Length: 401
Image (cartoon, rainbow, N blue to C red):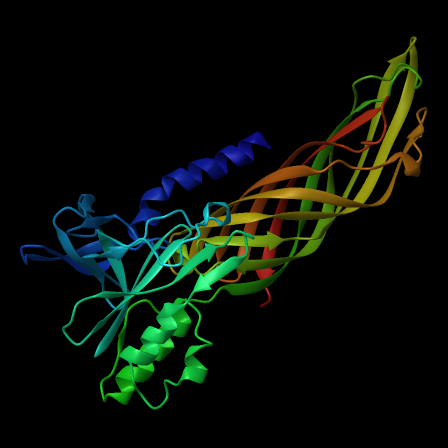
């Protein structure tokens, strides 16, 4: 078991150089003095607006860092565009507990790397830092102005909203399709605002250039089969012939199941959440001495095992990727008993919640995964007896949808 896990870790480290290269994509950056450099920029598929960027002059070249100090523009062709501007920005804590009574945002001139969402006769920009978000606009060659939005409270601690941005949309972007009825349904989010800006540009006879396109998560259903290898150590107390530390050896058993996975739309689809119900069983036998008498003991256990967790992908190329995962593991008990010179009734079984760690490889719709589940007590409700079950699985999967 340790040899297999070690081999997967060595494979992961050996391929890390290949994995790193695919993050660098063709782009350019411009300094404040107007100097433009064509290069390869690491595409972080950012959720928050970055304050620095990694780049290479060639794919095999040295990785360098771009910081905001003298930076003006960073472009990853057809995907992202960031521009540094000094704009009014409210840096106040946005958490519910820290809400103030002030309806108007406390705007201060702040240099920010703005994400260019859309360019045209009217251009839309955004800035996000954890729970803080702000949108800005520019018409023609005018100055960049904030779209005003603030969450605040009153003495009764009601949650209130300043949606002045809706009035700004009506005033600044007069167009047949931009009506009051429509604008009051516009939320302070990228998709809603972008729709308004696209329609306004079209209304004025100008096309919009999009950089940050809307992303969607991906849902997968995977079927898998494989094997479990398990071993158990039982400490059954003085009432059971002084049976302490009785080990039922490693045994293989089949498994099969289905996995539901949702791949999040940020960070280049590298993160996902999953639930993977599967059939799990174990059957082991042992002999031990009790007062010079050889005793026999057999343990049988089966359950529907449900890991619920997260997975991180590391891409080798468009078809291949390595992944690591972690999950909370819950068992829905099916059957179990101890037999031989020690008997354990089915009613005594209740498995404790555990966790698992996994390493795997995926090629197109096929996957191979090794998962380790440390000791879990199969008799959680028993104060005198313990059965610790440890499991290791290898499964082969196929993505159905």
